[in-house]
Length: 204
Image (cartoon, rainbow, N blue to C red; front, side):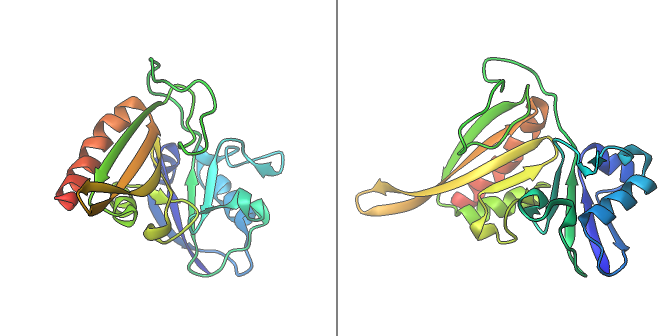
């Protein structure tokens, strides 16, 4: 069977690219693929599976769904599936808005030292916001449909999306999309202006 493998951050460097399409024996599961990757790439050896379990703090997504919420390493794979592998990410700078503890579930999970930013735009949909984040290198989490997306993860950043109806004037009501970001400060400094330009053009 043929699988699409997507790598992020240091794993991308180890694999020599973001996307690799390769064949695996029919009936392979996530554990089989990760063990093959550890054997093939020095930069992944011992970093994907630890003591027979998925290594702590790494995220592996099957078609946008975290395998920890499926059957973990025993998650079945089929021809055409997409497997995304995120290494532990830490860094950024500490400051008044740096993350040192758990945050409410409505905000994206963050690594220690990451910072948070939040932006809101009227006149665009959550689907469009998720699509823009995909175009900027993000991966939908929990769904393949941008219209249903509430979380997008990228290299050194994560974002959650929410939408609500607001009154703009008199009886005019618009959708307002709020995007909460967590990430390395330098990464967000590059990402947010790009996202904002797309959102502002769409929102008129």
